[in-house]
Amino acid sequence: MDKILSQQEMNTLLNSPEGADQTGDANAAGTTPKLTVYNFRRPDRFPKPVLHALQRIHDRFCSNGAASFSAYFRTSTEMTVLSAEQSTVSDFLKSLTESTCLNTIAMRPLQGTAILEVGPDIAFPLIDRLLGGIGGPADSSRKITDIEKNVIRGVINLITTDLTEAWRPTFDLSFNVLATETNPELLQPSSPNEVVLVFGIEVKMGETRGTLHLCLPFSALEPVLDIFEKGNPVEVREEVPVPDHRRKVLRCVLKAPVTVACELHPTMVAVSDLLNLANGDVMTLDNAISDTVQLLVEGKPSFSASLMEIEGRKSAGVIGRIT
Image (cartoon, rainbow, N blue to C red; front, side):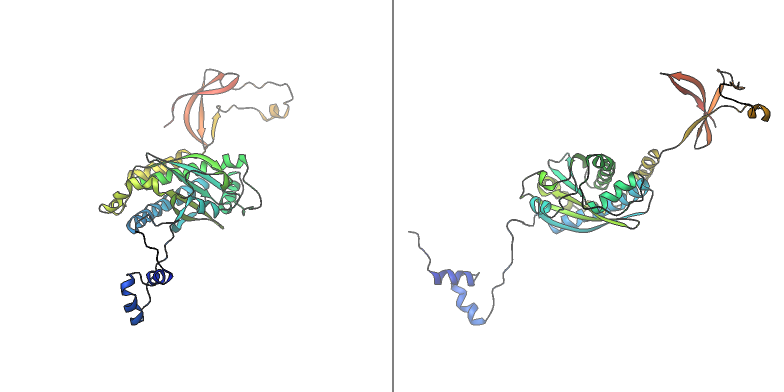
């Protein structure tokens, strides 16, 4: 038959974690039971070795990201991991401002969605710089517009590319943007009680400082957590091979804009003829239609070409490279 405990018996159990039979001895010795606070809504799921390994991966991301931002924005940039905290999706979203740049990120081939938050303290200066400004201070009193979301999308893609590169020595994980929102209340990528690991990353660009937050769900990373406990693979493969550096530099160089001009051979004209030119006059050049011309890249002769017309536009067909 079930027994209902009296209030005295309940007090005895609560005051002695080792059992009611030892309560008298504990009280006689004057010892106080040791209690540990445990929040069942926010359990610690990531073991310390895994946290340290993930920290090193994202330290590498900061190193790669700083180099990419410096080349992309043509200004010195620093990135640093400030914090790595376990939380839940709902608590993370509640901690954000009402107007921010939130991006859901696919983590293929893993099942799950990460969240990348670009705070308004750094989002607005980046948008200003992309639109030709100097990266002025953030205007936190307004929301990011749809046009500005498209403008900053290139920066988000740059970040996901560097995340993929940072993870590659440990696990071939590909990060890809799924959607962008500005209101945290509209973003529900998973269960509100989903345990996540949130990295706070500080970005310094000249006089501008801001914060990125990368939110990684435990359920997505759980299938690969065992790789961090097998000889610490991050330490073994910490050095990035030289070809990766060359490929990264080449990728940045290939995106740099250059000026291309088509130049005809010079024609000698008397000064008196130039002074007498008027509207409607036609000047005959020394070039024939069949002659080749030069294509100049940043003012340097680089290609020979022939003049042509395509769909009503004057064009030049490349014939060969000038060595």
